[in-house]
Image (cartoon, rainbow, N blue to C red; front, side):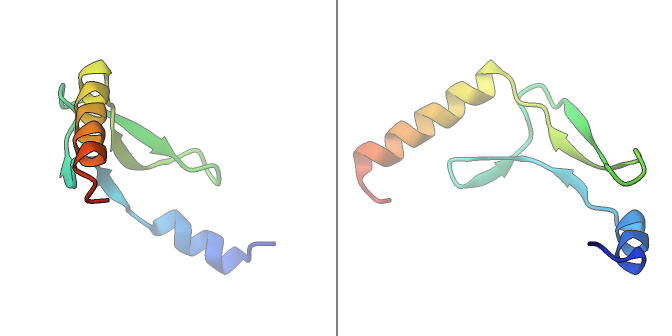
Length: 73
């Protein structure tokens, strides 16, 4: 069970924005769009994440294929 002190601390936390991680680099979504992350504790937005689309998936898959074929993983 989580304590009330921990809940109060988490309510005050500001995580900020999080980007996509593609080809070893933190990057914004191709469109620049973001989505809010909502706290299950109080329903308040506490962070935002990049809202990736098909173009972002394509970039990630190409980067993964390149890394796989290079064998540096």
